[in-house]
Image 1 (cartoon, rainbow, N blue to C red):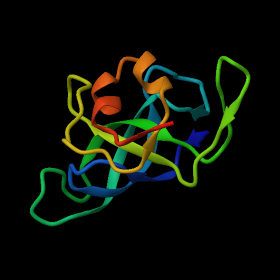
Image 2: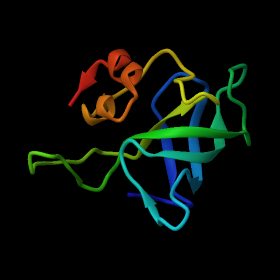
Image 3: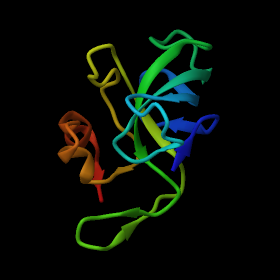
Image 4: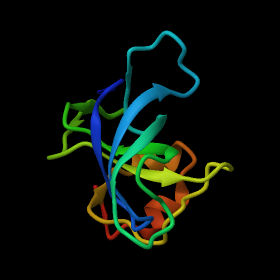
Length: 122
C-alpha cells in the first residue's frame, strides 16, 4: 500500500532515483494505491543530465510494494522495497530498462512493455 507522502524508488533508467507520491489517479477518496495503480509524484532525487529533473511532477505506475499483495490463486507476494516506473503523458514507459523484479500481474493491468523489459518476472 502506497499512501500520499510515501517515498518510492524508481526502477527504470529515466533519470529519477527517488519520488514522493502526492496523488492517486482515478481514486478521489481512496487513501492508498497498490501494484498497477497510477500515481502522481514529485521527483526528489535525480541523476544529472537525464530526461527527468529534480522537483519535476511526473506520473508513475507502482511495480513493487512492501506490504503483501494477494494474487487471484490465494497466494501472497511481497517485495523488499516500494518501487515505481515513470510514465509519459500517454501512460507509456519513459525509460528503456527495468531494474529489479516485477510481478506478472502488471501485464494484466495493461503495462506489457514493463514486463517485456524486466529481467525477473515473479
